[in-house]
Length: 619
Image: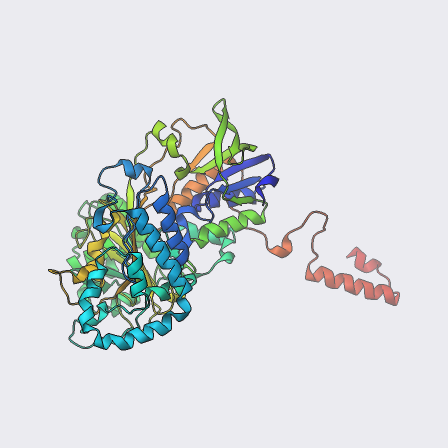
């Protein structure tokens, strides 16, 4: 809707299109509230958004010139390794959380940003001829041994415009330095994918800013089903759960079939594991459990690792009750839609907020992107109206806002900031090869393996419509200790074949590891920390937190429901939407059912034949 046509009064004005705000908008519109939903961005879902590859490059450039973000970039070779370290205004104020702009060869980030953007644009223009150039470069690679060292040095230098022109269309030779697998046998030749190909096929990528999964019996799946919002999108099963232990990846046995088919567990361990999982589902009285609960159950180190890090997904200092609750939640979600407890939305997590926005629009919600709120008009500790970015006054009964919009107001309240470290990788193969190339994997990395914090990794294949065929999209997330690069790069170097793994003094044996074609590191604010709700804000202003570090969406759905109950306490939260044929529009009567239509037709035939209609009318 055009901003000039906006009505001057609404029941609820919502600023931000993240998951929590979108659920609130859908729930309010569904019960008849007049909703105005705004976002200053040009896209939906805010920090929950999914981008195509080219749109993500644009997003990166926007962060580099943003006044509230520090960014350091490094882009090398057409087969790009890009590192972006970002933090919000609160992160910038915290020491040691954001990498200085001049670190890792980035003395002038704006010039590097222009170079990266120019390289991406020129690669897109020459995408049609890129394949022919790659074939030619591949033929010349056999006689280019003398240039190999020069190319390798370029991987560690700052990428500039002259290098972009020189290297465009060349094939990376990094994979050729490790042709032997861990078993000593030759690896199958992998099809090499250049940076130009990634740009050309950029629309086939849907890269999430936040990495999460849906528990099959979680609150978000229940809400999607109950409200009929699930008809707006599709989902894929997570096909396997892996864990990283002692430098190796192992598959975690989840279901009864997995436990008895596992070769990693002895017969005794299988029996102990099944007995323990059965006892968890029986919800035995928690006061009988001690702090060292798993040790008391006489479970070996192998089973304790699986249960603690891959099933409950908690740390060793987690209270017993919380650990048991997490284990039950995992087990109850097993078998509902497949052999694992997790689902992933096709086309990425950014689809979920958009689905709820769609529902809100169906029931009368008005949407305006690139539109914001400049100030609030407050009287008697209540927000009476807002002034939008065009100067229009809009009256409202409630104002819902994403916490990222509070901006300078944060200095007025107690605001504790904690960050998440994120890494996004595009790789040429799976972390654990199998018979199927369409595996969706959830990988848990305990603290101490390569990072100070526990890391959750999600590997997506092309069938999820998040990456092009022949590639995999890998998301890594952990609690920030330092910058995202410092937190996660060591783990990435161990599990993948990267330029850093070829540095002197490190192992040069790839062991069949996937090659990283492109990578991105950044920090984002953790939405777990309590925000400013109730700390001096008007009573009808409701603040929504952003993504947090857990794997599920429980906190955001609960928060959306609490906000909805404050706005309309006597209404049902997201009741089922009617089927399209059941909707009655203004000026129209209800659509007759098939039986009623047949009865009318039969009555018409009887009238034409002159038969008496009174018996039928009496019926």
